[in-house]
Amino acid sequence: MGASASRGMASTIRPHGNVVYRRICDLERISALDPKRAVRRWSGLRHERDIRAHVHLLYHGLTAGPAMKLIFSRKGFDSAAGGVPSPIIEGTPISIPIPTTRRSETSYRRVGLGDTVEKITRGRISADHLCHEDPAFANGRWAFGQTGTAQSHLANNAVGVGDVFLFFGLFASNNGKDRHHRIFGYLVVDEVRHLRAHPSKSDSPDGFERRHPHTIGEWDENNTLYLGHGMKAEIAHPSLRLTRPDAPVSVWSVPTWLKAAGLTYHSNPLRWTGDCELHVASRGQEFVSNISDNSAARGWLHKVCTMIGEGTCGH
Image 1: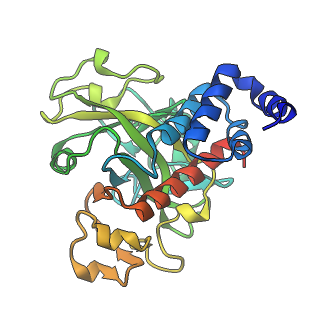
Image 2: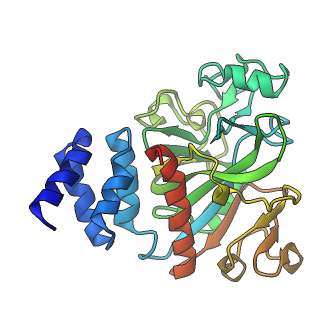
């Protein structure tokens, strides 16, 4: 690459500093990606921590590396918790935390969702109602708590550092139509904290504005917090939609590799139509697939994470 090209790229990335620029270029070379494409991808990010989240994916490699588990993790409002779908507002999916009456210091108003929750529930849930803000997202980092049967399921499947959660939920357009499941974020696990039954305020992770609910009150003994880097979608990308168009919410279009790789809670062959359609279980929060070194699965995951990240780049 010529000197003039290098100067042009550096000037594009300059708002984030030369150290960050060098880190991106080094890691893009490791991943054998085009540096010019890298600058286009990174230069629109708002925070250096956002950049580190993407760099983390490149460095640890979603397309190569040690065995990996992929977890489809159901979160936010649905017909049971909240009673309505989370909305898509001006093209952005807004996952609404479920309501709660305990183990929370956070209201919908406090998280900036007061008007939204009152509108979509027609006043049934007020802006000052407590919510379970989990998973919590801030500056390119997630903090996700799990406990009870769902955490036992994750532990039994050896979910830990290096594994990837894909958060999905029930969404609808702003007028409540076209209800469907869609992916709205990903978390690459950096750390697992075993909080146990009686966590304290000091257990709440740094870097988040509000205390995490899994550090408040009494929980099951297996109360656990998953921390890591990732992104939250700012664009309702069509490819992040799980529900097949014009089908019931529970009928998903899935990649061809998923049936062979396996998905917990979905071992019954009757749930599968061919290799590309899945009738997803109505119960259960965490569906685990051990994708190991499956190159097709890792390639699909990389594309999904890239689409989630594109929303934060202003693309």
